[in-house]
Image 1 (cartoon, one colour):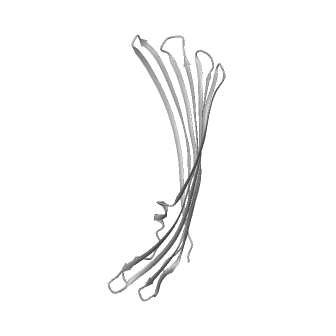
Image 2 (cartoon, rainbow, N blue to C red; image 1 turned 45 degrees about the vertical axis):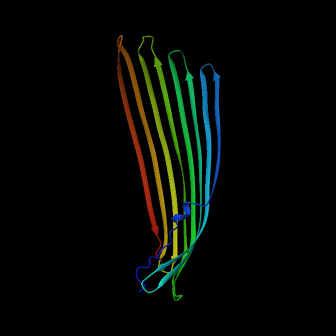
Image 3 (cartoon, helix red, strand yellow; image 1 turned 90 degrees about the vertical axis):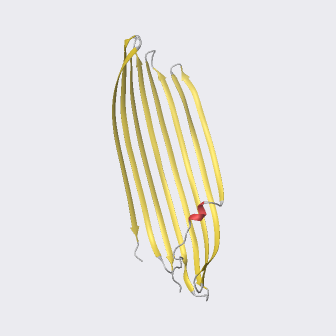
Length: 238
């Protein structure tokens, strides 16, 4: 009989392991002392990677009293873009006070596309399955973080005070489509994913020398983390 023939779908996974890959990278570093009390350094980095692959498969499945001949053609493309920048600014207000500000920004975008055709026939040339497969996935997001540190020294040796403020804002959106138009399977589906992050924290530290070899340290911390994830799937009735 014809039972047990596993030819109902199309596997596109193999397309991600080979093919032609392209890389592009660029970077920039900067450092300068704007004044006796103001020092700045930072960097920017860009990265691109792309992959393209074409694959053709001919397969024969042997059954008890017959065979199934399957032909698949798949094409896949993917691209990834990444931009990253960071900055470090140090301000020396006076001999007792200094401020350090460190912002960081990262932006990423990804794209993937897969498409293919499939045809399966029995040994007596009867058409069993035929059709096309198509899927796309696109996403983009950013991550922005900041860190602000104030440090103060006092005339008394061992007495210091520091306050640190930090925050992170992040957003990621992804959208994907899958269409299967096969004899034994019909599918039209869309997926969306949205995630957001908004975190901040406050840290304070105070030190006091209470003996020649002993220092008392008091710390305070407050953190607020807010995350939201929204995933939706839409299926079209065929």
